[in-house]
Amino acid sequence: MQLNKVHSVKTIDRVAAELGETVDRIFDLAIDTEPEDGVIWVYGPGDDSVIAFSPFGIENLRELIDMDHEHAR
Image (tube, rainbow, N blue to C red; front, side, top):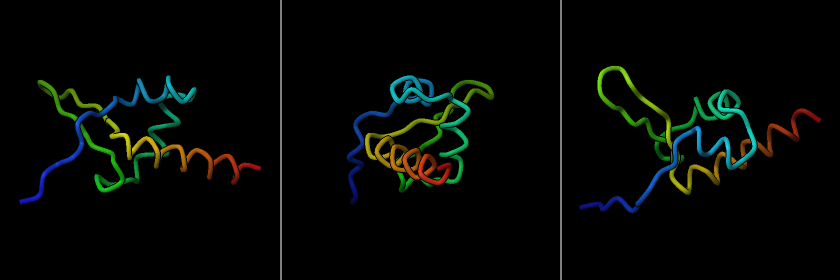
C-alpha cells in the first residue's frame, strides 16, 4: 500500500504572494501540470475549488517561472 507523503499544500494565492507573481500568471504556468508534478485541485462546498501546490509542486513551479523568464529574453 502506497502512503501519501504530502503533509501540506499551499493555495495558488499564497504561492503567488510568496513568489511575487500574479495568480493569473501562476495559473497559466501550472494549468498543464499533473498531480505527479505536485499540483492538485481542492474542492469545497458547491462549485468552490482552488488549485494548490505541494512543496514539490512549488519547486516545479519555480523552474517553470525561470524557464519562462529565459524564454522571454
